[in-house]
Amino acid sequence: MLTYDLDQRGSTPLYEYLYQCIRQDIITGVLHAGERLPSKRTLAQHLSIGIITVANAYAQLAVEGYITSKEKLGYFVEDVSNYRLRRRSAAPAIPEPREKEYLADFKANRISLKNFPLATWSRLMRETLSLQNDELLKTVPYNGVYELRKAIADYLAHNRAMQVDPAQIIIGAGTEYLYGRLLQMFGPACTFAIEEPGYKKFAAISASYGNPWKYIPIDESGMQIDALEESGADVVHVSPANHFPTGIVMPVTRRIELFEWVNRIRKRYIIEDDYDSEFRYNGRFILPLYAQDTQNRVIYINTFSKSLVPSLRISYMVLPRRLLTRYEQTMSFYSCTVSSFEQYTLARFISDGYFERHINKMKLYYREQRHKILAALKASPLAKRSGIIERNAGTHFLLHIKTMLSEEEVRRSAAAASLQLSFYSDYSYSKTTSDGITLVINYAGIEESKLSEVIKRLESIFITQ
Image (cartoon, rainbow, N blue to C red):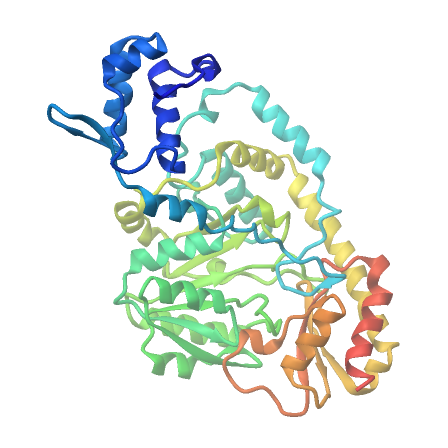
């Protein structure tokens, strides 16, 4: 006879606890396949419970296939041996991936985290939450909260000479998200052109949406317009103020050629990626293409990931007026991917002047950091077999090192030395030079206290060969 201590059920309903006990006995093999269960009345009397309780437990077991009812004969245990086998050989838990820690990580998305004004941001966040404004709890408009779009529009007017209506701004969680919306809006019949070398992730996103793309070579003035024309592309992605990874600034003559290209056919557009453009150390800022556009053909994209912190995941794009209706009709069903709490806080951070002060502070910090790492490299034995290519902008430069080592050998040696290196070839599909290796040195996340040791480990890779 089935016997269970029903006092152990706690707050679990009686019928459910009885069901769990019988189910466990079936799974573990205490009750064998084909074995007849006590009648509902008999088991109810044995356990001093109601018949309805037993009936409900049996019914649930039957629904799930653990027992079966045979007319006038009663309930019988089903064969669940395969289920028991699966339970015994269940796969181990999948371990959570952990990002490896390096002494120095030269990847392009690394920044100095210690300089983020966390106290100010925390205070503004608390003040935002303390307002108890119903707007904080409502669904965020598809293009982002108005206050943040207005703050960004004002900032662009004062710092980028861009006249933008807040309605033209779309807020999203990262540039990848915004690129995806553009790709979807333009559709798979649209061909995109991408700089070579350049931002490979954009090509990967384009491929995932089924949009064809073309790689267009660059020269010392940026993307080659003749090659762009020959590609048959409809939309081109460029970084005219600070091309990555070369740092090339597109001169006015090439900009005129690019505008001539886009204005020749109505369906053509330019996606201007202004990433990392805030950090320019000599001369005035570079005027965006958007500010020079007279025919509403430029889509401007920027992010706060490099200027603030990557985890913030707030980016934005400015659509030309001629695309607003099209975007609203085709993309407005997507919800905004950034919480209202962070958007209102960032709006205050920009409007109250904290963002501009932070940018000015980081310019000084990165300029000094750049000076120190360049000086350390020039004083190193590496200087005799390397050359530095940098353009006083951004937070990276190119370091070409003459070596007989292959990139794979350098990667392995660097990993063993706790260095995460970034190679020029990571951003290019063309063949690299045979006289050495070109590294992309993003110095934003390299702590000054570790700089000497980082240089020593680079020396150990390339000098002691």
